[in-house]
Length: 581
Ligand code: FES
Image (cartoon, rainbow, N blue to C red; front, side):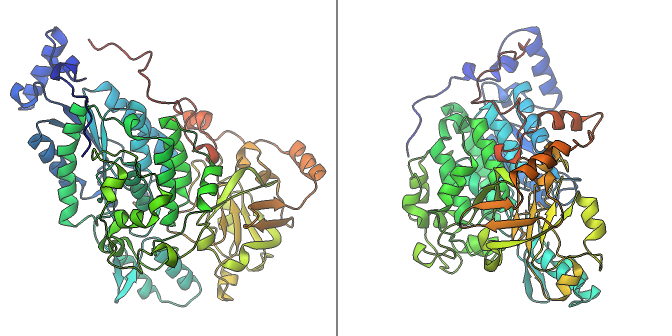
């Protein structure tokens, strides 16, 4: 095990400025710590570890964090640290409206400012439900203190009358069957009761499973642990081991900036592609990389997708769920299959290289984790499209769509916003056929706002009844990682800021060519220019509060939707950081 030669002395700890010096302010810090029942021997000369916990009564994916945080603390105490739990905003995917994505950057700011303003020497981040993972890490990368992430872990497989159910994917599937009249209300209630039956995040290869796997590949959580089901006793062990490890990392001064590199982000992109992970990872990994000072962009995703096979047979692209993936060997076994496609020299929080971490990992079910010569899809798990409809790019997930739609031309049926679509999509008089292209405008980072997961636009009820299950759909929204279909997503620039998507009209022909990576509206340049000249910007959506800040500073999808004033390179010491008195 390679060890960092650096070793901090107690007086070099950041928390020394609060606890170690002899002045009036530090008297206050010590006396107020005593007020909470701690003796000075509990913390003197020890690393203070901030545990940023996104537990909440309204976040079912993190309902076990009340217990897990005690296990993290146990590890910190055992290793000679001083744990301080700091609750942070819990972005609860199923409940928060209009979308948790509106608040990802707010949690990132909260994380950074908690770490900056309190006596933290290192941190443990507790997250997993979709946006919590990138948000916590964006903040921690910017602050650049020693950091380990504790992934919430997937929930157990869903079950209804003996049928295995997967989060999200089976919701959409059985909702379509209910609307088509193929199942009863009683069946639907059975699905409702059985689809989420334990703590933990969604157990399909949705955004949560995708991002936690990306974080492990980046080397920011303990190796081998991102795929453990949340209720498994090994998940509790991971929490306590994380507590032990972060204390040692503080002494070693092992920070995200020592671990992250352009190559480690390439590794994470490869892992996401091999998992057929959520398209949301494109936005989040770009944001994370840019916080760390690396120019990851859409073209890099496309380039890596051309040589990365899909090896995980997981829903929605495949058959199994995260519990099966863990029993089949988990992420370490998958990374072994990728082998020479990865840069195994990258360093991790374990104090070892990625290659050392995964050495000897075995596959125990080769249908769940495929060998490269038995890949689910040989390449192109994701494709980046450009054209006159998306000059700054758009993404699509070819394995999750019906193959005949990969090259398709059809007439647009345009909805000017979500409410327009909700009102008209099931209208029996709507002029639409299976060949039509459903277009949703104003669902992007600013337009929705928050770029919600509306991208899996609903198929009209009358077409569902005819047996249609996939159509070409285009929007500037995102799509849940548990969704599927021929959905062109993240169109940039978005309609709300005057991107070409805003100029499409019902009846225009739209052409998709995935092999050629093109998405175009078949109108002349002159017609496009005339429509642009006539386009009126929509009214501002917020007059007060966080929304004003959000709209002023949020970036487009191709740049990761971070705030412009946070997307700085590296975590340089803050010029204006206040003196601590
Ligand atoms: Fe939390 Fe899906 S709802 S991860």
